[in-house]
Length: 372
Image 1 (cartoon, one colour):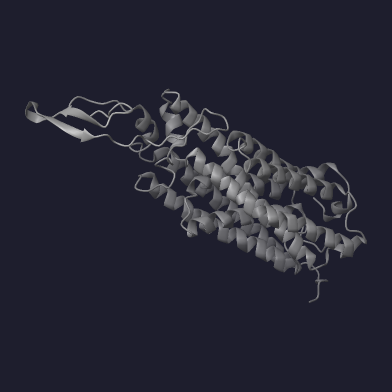
Image 2 (image 1 turned 135 degrees about the horizontal axis):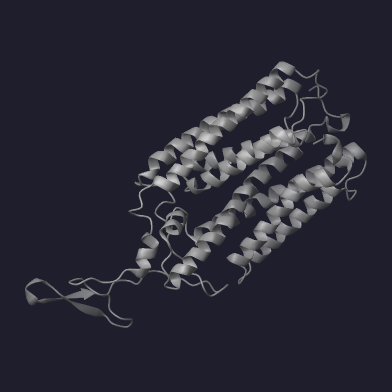
């Protein structure tokens, strides 16, 4: 395989730009469709969790027995009475980690279901698929224009990163996973990422310096992109967990939330589900991030004659690894589930972002030749 490709094909590079802009336009339409799903969806089921905790008995209905009672009596038609078995109490398990929040069911809007908003949600997902195809075509034509991997600089890394994130989201949907709640924050982030890429980070299609002409470019950088995209989904889950956790704590305290807050929060899975989702993604990605660092060290040995030289990118990659290692250790330790673990997960992803943006912009090192 000839790693030293020919001169850039400017026509293909221009087509790539058009495809990326087209993808952005469709992502905007998807964004409004997700907004419509969250805004105009039926409110008849939204608030079910709150109602389950605050529902009061009405006249002529059976009232659950007090704790310790085996049965209750309820007035029936004609003045007679009927003995009813004591219903099982709702399952509300208080976490030992903070002692103030409970485990509640997923919001009825989390998976759309029979809600009116499901129509808008299907439109949003369809538009996301179309945008992803345009996005993928843009990344592919960029690669073809230079006959190399399309992640040789920050612009290319950004476009590939957001493409993989959307692809992972659609993959979860294809696998029948309840992840549609990711759609709105994901599309919003993708638009911001692509907007930054085509303005501040844009770099003309060109060949790379000789040190980057290696098969490790396909292995090391592609793994970094995949890991980062999946860690982003874990980040979204951790961030939304904090909001849903506060909402559930509000309910458990006996306070009635506002309609707007209920409408939004009931479109999310339970805090417990979000916590588990974030943990499973981060735990799954961590070994691959470990291999990404190892692969980078091997490539550095081939390109620069040393495996580790405390370059800023190397240092912050390791800091990110340590942050996620601490998160996983804390998450697996009693007392560090919930909010504490979520804050640590957010800090770990912040390290990843700084490793990408901050190191490339504020520091000079051997990785600087990739360009902005």
